Image (tube, rainbow, N blue to C red; front, side, top):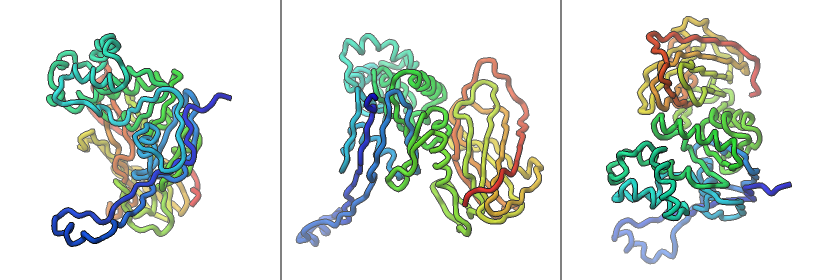
Length: 398
């Protein structure tokens, strides 16, 4: 049996955080005789183990602060593990922070050669691929301008275009699908779809469970600095959703962009990651009740990449019968929304409330994202008429 392309064995990473920092001359003088600072050990990763096979699209998911990005930087060689070892076969290229190493005082053309050199290309090799790089970035008229005059989107286009030329055996990707304008996002999707068909090994860190289901063969879930689940993309995505379940009697809480009493909470939110042409948007939701609850109302809103909400509704407005649930029961909600969206990245907010809107059981901002790609003959839709289906599906394990 062939050796795995990536082997992570017993990897731990600790950071030392000093508690005594002198920022004034007075403080330095008063504490001159102190022998040492007090240091706190932060355990970013603890005993992480997994293998990635050649040609596998491997997902790494988890909540903010769980250790995902630290793991990716260890794989990239940016950090060294405190304990354990990492072995990577073949050439590795990180898609972690596109444009790192760019010089704003140089032109776009000069930065292509600079970035190419950082990726190991000779000047002759960059000469041969230069026209393709510029064409891919669609910046033919801007290459002799200084980079400091570029928009952030233009800089990302160049960085991505150069990075894709690297002949890598292993790619590390950190949420790169979620940045840039619609045209850039389309090229990201197309490029990574093509890579999945090749023999390239890919490690993909993301918060999007839709992207995990779409691209990944397997995945791991990191929670509290360690791996708590490993398996198929579908199974790990489901375990990730379980992290947001609450126990009976939970009080109002805040988790990043999520608030609510927790009497009933969404356990999964699914939208297609890519919406092309005139295809309608389907929002598939599932929620579980942590206690007996009456007359629940379900709603959603869609906002663009700048955070502006421009579309939304709820089950009461749609005159759907109010739903009563017993503790442990689950309910599925399916919204079908006509494609009235402009090109680019969009976010979906979801909520559950009582019939009067006085109690918020669950409000989850940016629970899912999707990218819209328009085609030339997409019909213009004048009216927006969403459809809604709500059905109980049985008891949940609480």
